[in-house]
Image 1 (tube, rainbow, N blue to C red):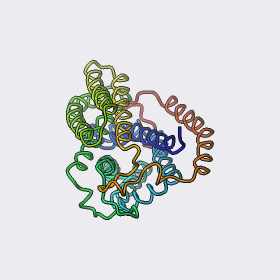
Image 2: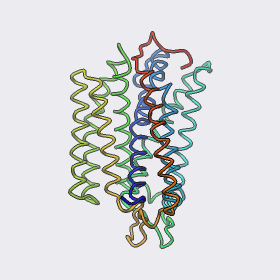
Image 3: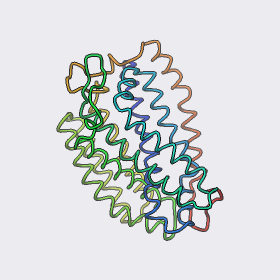
Image 4: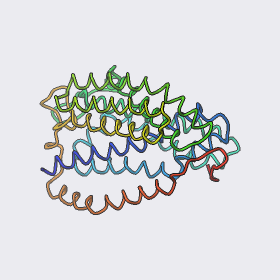
Length: 329
């Protein structure tokens, strides 16, 4: 396998990991006002992600760094053309992070809860808008520079993509809370899953079908079927009270959707409306020497990072209730 292809796959893995882990963080933040009826409820909800949310964001940092090092042309075009949406995502993540750290120090924590809500909702929506535009193709000139504007990015297909990721992450947060909480909080999370789940299945299925009709092959149709089965399985498991299986099924759906979208791109990394100007794994890649060094670094440090993060989740695996909220949330 060529190093350019290998690093395209590794970047897809990083984004899948980010959406899988940060996805339920976003979902918990979005559901904070809906499921958290009082301060004790909201402290318990935040406590479910308190030990892990900042570690989950590392996947985004590594994905961005890997893109910059492995495919600098892709990185440059993406961050210049999508500057405003990515800036809004970054701003929302900063505000959300500050809110997590300071809400328990405030005399009016509800003000920080608003920051957590919007700091979760905005990225959950805009990531879908961004990736949908990449799949659809954007106006690039012969120098691979973006020639559109903000309104170009706000097309119906991209907005549908934003609705899909917003619904998907909200559902992911609901099944995560059903898994990680007990008592009335768990019951509320299950009720939310029963409402949001069918909506996610419909809009997600519609988006994937449209995507495959535009760019797909016979192989990637399998991803549509598996993702739909995962979402349906999560809903069915929730109805049966199998919280662990519900979370696993939804996690599979998120990973499969991410891989399906990246598979629809390959060998492009950023398609242009004029195919002659598209960025591919070949014309956007770094030198073979750079990719070789990166491969060795990834082979050494990736298992260490995964082992540490897995250990963190194992340590904080216990369910939380209103009566068992740790101090500092």
